[in-house]
Length: 113
Image (cartoon, rainbow, N blue to C red; front, side):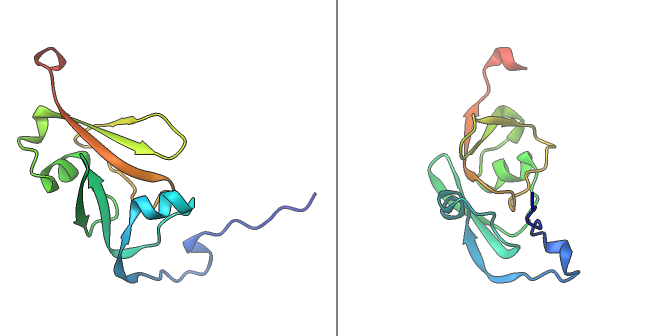
């Protein structure tokens, strides 16, 4: 059985960064991992935002959407083919991972602490 080599950015030792903004939802629809880029267009509660950090925290994503104070919101990541995943304020989201479609932020209930 012949195995196909995995394609990783590290394989060549060269990191190519696109000088453009990539749309995460578009890459998820195509089933492709987004490349490293100048910026990433992501959808939070149905609105589009652009962020330059490929590994933002949950708090940075909520702040980008002006959902403040961030501790008052629960953030969930929707990825293709999987259930929504809760993202903590200090959790990093790797935007170059394949399948990221959108984010949903909801106000925390008083019982959620």
